[in-house]
Length: 355
Image (cartoon, rainbow, N blue to C red; front, side, top):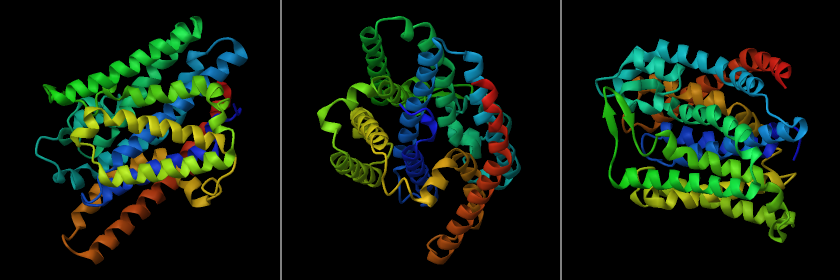
């Protein structure tokens, strides 16, 4: 495993692919509905990276410093999050008229700040509703290091994998059960649904974790020894992801009845193949790498900006669509670039104090 696992260029490429799927979803006026694929890629990659970082620390030091881990996560996540909340708050009154009546500014702010947006209906959280996936990841960051430190690293590895597999299975069954019974639970504004509820989505993050903990085993398989064969497999999986993203929306009954499991397993395979390949034409693409390294900020900033420019959209006008799309992307990338260079990177320099 490479020492700087979080800077493998191939993973930057996957992050770029993920955010492109999301941007297409929110900028295509409903013609493209495959943004959920990008979210699932984010989840698998996040599970892989976090588990790899924690496992490396355990191997080197024999223990995990939970305080250091949470401080590193805070330095990475909070600066851009706070800026995104401020921008969303400024643009709130100019964009949330596009939602159903009933949105709640204070609840949206609290949900974004304290990571429970996935428990709030989208029409309430307004231009901060996309923070739901960040809430799922943050819940994972909170409990997973504890599980690894006090349980997984202290028991027999085979037993650990069996337990992990059971949890993944239970998460998947929970999502399927909630979907089949149409179980959004509403209680004074709080919402637990099959698509955004943490336990229904934890399977993708845990699958990434399973890959991290078992990657040595997969590397020894004869099937993945040949780089050229791995590249062919990667290209095949890549085009499968493209096909799925343009043909299946997140509300598809087949998807939510269990097909999402197959998609997540393909994403795990794609992550593994990307790590296996030391060189690839996508890894050397400066544009793709630029987008991938800033994908977190792009995800945070794009939605309130996209909604703001919705006020200037003209239906059935191709020229207007092009102009609005250019403006949306320009301001998203501009703010993201400024944030990354002048806010996120300077603060990330303090991570070295918590290694």
